[in-house]
Image 1 (cartoon, rainbow, N blue to C red):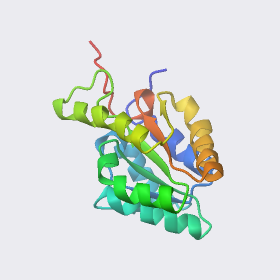
Image 2 (cartoon, rainbow, N blue to C red):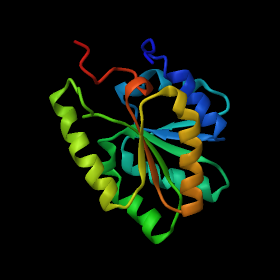
Image 3 (cartoon, rainbow, N blue to C red):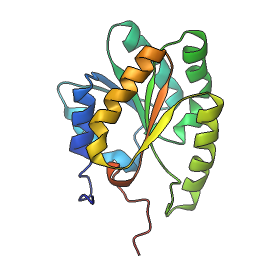
Image 4 (spheres, rainbow, N blue to C red):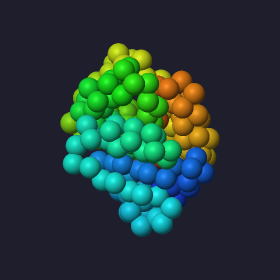
Length: 176
């Protein structure tokens, strides 16, 4: 399925709302730029941009302890920034955390600097024992966001969704 640029944004926000996510904390990146605009103006979602990914686990943990569902949204490079707070909340306190990351460095990445993001993402997720799924089709977003929340809550452990393909703004794939 090939969507027009930004065609992922409405299904993405709808998937969050369907999973009853009421708080989204994010360090915006270009692969979800239209989605951030929708989140910032949606009356059902509290959108909290941050200056560093390391701030997000505390926000999401606090929301969970306050009875709210929250997610962290970032580029996959942000995983390197949040390793310590993520490990602390998950391994010590068993707080369910859901990360939604764009997949810089996926096959066809057009920017040289994006490749190292992919090279470190999977080894870090594996080292932290965080289950993850790559989602490339917007038709899967609603089910995968819900499954991520359910898995994180029942396991009391972080989960990551990694977005690529039709689920992001720019196509990181070569088109020629």
